[in-house]
Length: 156
Length: 277
Picture 1 (tube, rainbow over the protein chains, first blue to last red):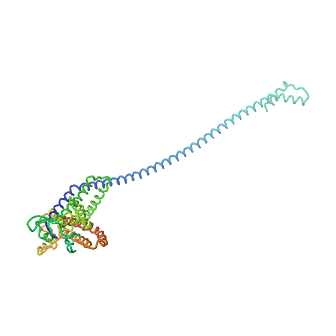
Picture 2 (tube, chains in turn brown, yellow; picture 1 turned 120 degrees about the vertical axis):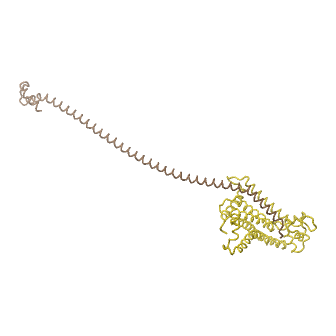
Picture 3 (cartoon, each protein chain N blue to C red; picture 1 turned 180 degrees about the vertical axis):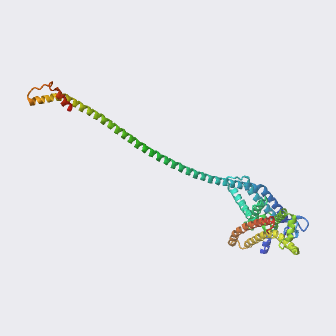
């Protein structure tokens, strides 16, 4: 338990060890640790940013989807409208056609009726004369009664 | 253990004597062969075993940490680098809490060296007390103390080294005039009590390195002493005491290394702060 030169020797070796540690141990190790810390912090920052971007992307995707849905709904509504329109147009066209055909038919019927009437009219004198002959049992000259017959036919 | 040692008192004394190189009574230089010769050598002698173990273990510390820092990478660290970074981080954390974040190039490496070196030197306590002295005896070396921190020369050498650094920073940060004036004006700022302040401050200043070094020495010396006392028991009974004591001692050496480092940081912090004491 004596104090002697050992103390001095210990002091010198202590100083030397600290100097070596200062030069070769502490700076590289702490530098590497700082670097890793920085890399980790950067990585975490980037992850947070990516998360934010993902969120934004999700939001915009949802918006796009919503817009697309709305657009498709519009399109369907438009298509419905158009289909109804087409049906309506077709109906109107058909009604037109029908009335046109009906008019044609009517005209034809009228025409036929007129013709029959004309035929009848042409033959009414003859029939009347024949009827009268049967009634009178005598010859009636169509020429003699032409005027009366024409009057009769005009009444038809 | 050795043949010429008979009584347990001799055994203990033998184990607590350093391998000392100095001037022998006949005027020649050489190793002391008896305890009397050691004390006769006085100041101009050196404990070769203390120096051997402290320098070897200091080299071991540098070897481990320089190996780790040579191949240090900021990527995924290997086992050794991981371990060294863990120690460095522990030291840095303590410095940050006590010393703050003031830029200082020396406090980090100083604290790291103190922590690991003191731990390694104290750890030699866990080697069975007779093992290395037994081989040393076979090699012809009479005295061989293994635990450098049980030598007050080693612990005081370190604490006085820290003390010089404390003085340096006191002068550097506060300036020689303010530091000198602080010795007179400190606890009681009244001119009539300046002489009293000076005595108090000088005692305070000198007590720091003394208590710093002797605290570590006292703890390690007591632990070593108990190992030696346990070694006096019959060989079949030793394990019952030496094992629990060794396990407990693992805690003590870690704690003492930590305390030595923390006190180093605290003293340097005090040297930096101008007001707080």
